[in-house]
Image 1 (tube, one colour):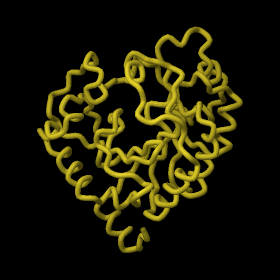
Image 2 (cartoon, rainbow, N blue to C red):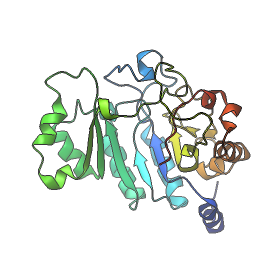
Image 3 (cartoon, rainbow, N blue to C red):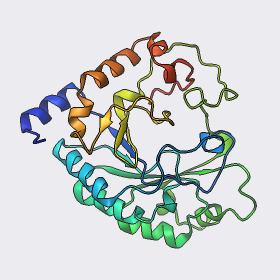
Length: 256
């Protein structure tokens, strides 16, 4: 597809996503009780091909994307062989974007921290998960960072995280939010799996709501498709979660 300037302008005026998450690899070195990885097999396995990542970068540059780029979808990005390459590619194609790493921190040594910042990573979001033991790597790294580098890190303990039931996959995780509230996640965020499927929500572990594939269509065409538009419009209205199986039992009510 060839994207014209008019197409880009019109799309941005209507509202384009401000965050995109890439499943650059499928594997994780943790099996937390509040994650579907503990119970279920991943739909896609392996690592995202650099050629596919670059293709999406080109598409994002064409639509003038300037938002957040992160490298996770139920995976640990530090296990990906091409993480540094993807970060550098993000900076090359999308210099006005924010490159953001979500990680459990178990592999984030001081050396890797420096390497990632040198590759162009802007922000670290590190969660110290359950049962990591006394020799948790990143806690020592974080405590030894100078203040200017600590500013790059959002560091939290798993006890402080507000968890969801992952679209109903983990029914034991409950919260006290009222039912049938609208959901604004699909208005701002897109998830791309390692094979190129575009998902409107990071809770969709089994990819039941795939809106298309960037190998077959431009990401802007997928975003502007009737199917995707209808989904976003339905979810922004109170009471419409019941229209979709994955949304019906979901207790994620985050607004931002």
